[in-house]
Length: 101
Image (cartoon, rainbow, N blue to C red; front, side):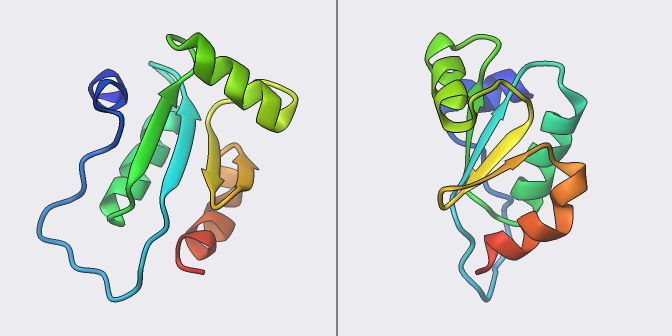
């Protein structure tokens, strides 16, 4: 699933969901086969977020971009309005809040 989403440049939005608050655009750095990255993608899609997936395993530009942002490579990494979260599960409540700030 990740490869198809990354190829399209943006995750599909969940159909039939109407949110009363705006949801911010999400930048997700991950790689094929990363279970936490897949979980993060599903989490954002379930909330109607526009997800821009960057596969650092296949895209050297994404790798350089992530390294320049964080000074290291760590997947999944999530960026919401310039705020970076390295990892996913440990920051779930903060990520949820950042989506709706």
